[in-house]
Length: 239
Image (cartoon, rainbow, N blue to C red; front, side, top):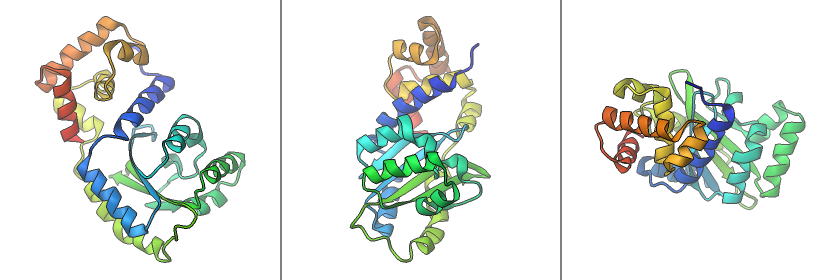
């Protein structure tokens, strides 16, 4: 069985991005709005982080879709606040990290954020154990004053946000163990939850149409459901 390539994973991530950005997720939405109010921020984004430390499943609040699309498809790889650069930090500032990662890539990213009028950003990193599993972006535009106590506020609410957003959420590996799902079946479930057809799943994963159908049969059996909508409903409850 072929493993999923980086390109295929990016395709899944892009599909998930556009679906989850408009998905109703009460717990995450409430946490995002709470943090946005605490920081008097212009915009926010909450997202999951996969095993490769890549973003996915974005939930947006006030972020221009053009900015988000460009970030995911091209500029995210240059982001000095990317989870791959988080080290042990609970949160980090764009202005500070841009100085630490002073190179052409960071300069290109700052030029990108400047085009959208972003004055500064703070990135939260949420962990399960020692592993980053989610993050949150806090964004200030010109004219939106950054609170003088923003760093202190971040220190005080980080653990609260982390507990409420990821403390009780099962990871992909935990879901796999619970239901006996294979990694490929998890890939298929991810795309089903994004509304992809069998043909689109086949193209994205580089597998045959018949293989997709076989995976779906096994997924239905393991999850104890009979329809694709039931799979989506079950996964939404788990997340």
